[in-house]
Amino acid sequence: MADRYDLVVIGAGPAGYTAAIRAAQLGLKVVCVDDWQTASGEPALGGTCLNAGCIPSKALLETSELFAHARDHGPTYGLKFKELLLDLTAMLAHKDKVVSELTRGIATLFQANGVTWISGRGKLLPKNIVEISGKIQQQIESEYVILASGSVPVGLKSAPFDGQRIVDSQGALEFKEVPPRLGVIGAGVIGLELGSVWHRLGAEVVLLEAQETFLSMADEQIAREALKQFNAQGLDIRLGARVLESKVENNSVTVRYQDKNGEHTEQVDKLIVAVGRRSNTAGLMADDSKLLLDEWGFVHVDEYCRTNLPKVYAVGDLVRGPMLAHKGMEEGVMVAERISGRETKVNYDVVPSVIYTHPEIAWVGKTEQALKAAGTTCRSGMFPFAANGRARAMGQAAGFIKVLADFHTDRVLGVHLIGPHCSELVAPAALAMSFGASNEDIMLTMFAHPTLSEALHEASLAVAGHAIHMAQPRKGTIKQ
Figure 1 (cartoon, helix red, strand yellow):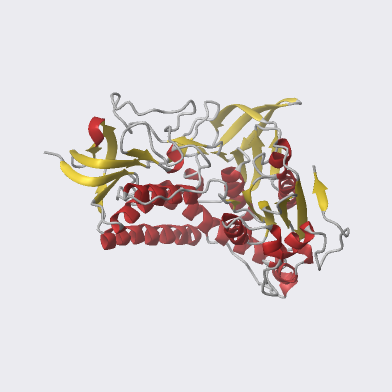
Figure 2 (cartoon, one colour):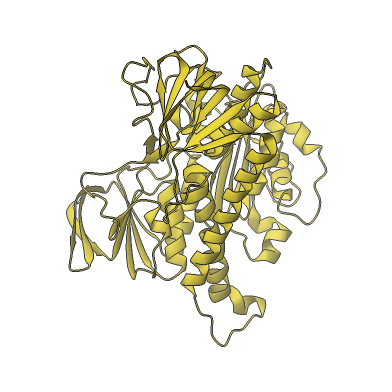
């Protein structure tokens, strides 16, 4: 006889564990099923994000930036070192410690909220029965099911993973030494972040991007500034470069690629394949479950994350929209609350995005090119960090903040940032947009001085043509 629950959540990444906790808080009997295991074979909560993505990569980004900043800019601040040494083993140990503490934290939250955790692979069968394959084979009956099995890296036939020389994003977090020359296929979010980590630590890095346009999802002005900053740092970014073949030979990788000038070869010590991720639906449902997938392989859902099956939901990287942990978490909470009878929803118009490079890149809302394509007339205001006192004092004055507001209603339609701590600065912009703020609302808000956030205030003032700390025309520029 199968065990009976109110809700089964398949997947314990950000979307899944958040849904499980919130549903338990609302009084449901919840079980969460997940098959993630550490390198030593121990089960762990948190999914890819916590164990092999968001968290470990940010730990390495933070420590590598501290190292590079001390090495490259210490004398500017009057800091002189007899010798600055890199202890990569200790750096990786710090990363692993952070991950371990956070995974144990989720287990503690499960226990505190009464969520049952089963280690194993969950498969959806007809009639909302979930079959679990693991150390113990079992079936669970449930009134509701939330599918939250996340995503996996996309592979390339022209660069097959071997786990040693050609690796995915997880393998790129485990290098035991800094590769003298590193190749990265893909100059998107993952490729830029991982390339930045190893470049800061001393690797020569070349990124091969198949698209002709750099960071096409970002605002064009932001993307141009980012490319300029990354090139100045020494990242070798080659656009329109389509990889044809990769061969491991003599402890290195030979990469053959093609661009508008013909075929070329590059030899690197390690090669990271970072061309994106796809939904993890393999083995998720029985053949006769009749779960509907869309043409891109995502689970088909409506605006409330309902699938075509009664009382079966799907959230996070399994479904349409950006593959972002915070987007999945909000979907998990929404579904848990709707199952419990609450009329909640996710505002998909205000989903912040961040690239944790140096400088950081972030945005929320529409880009200027998207607004133009839609025929929306808007006003634009931009303020450089070079005119911000706090950024100057930090020695991080590159970049700017850009605000876009509707010409007729003054409603803020998009905020785009590149510069120091923009991952944090995008939050007040998202908050303002969530409340439907006008640009005037931001203009009339008092910001502390001296802070980086003042750049957001000044960019808002620039929309109206009267930024205080930047010379500009008397009237804001009108974008048609």
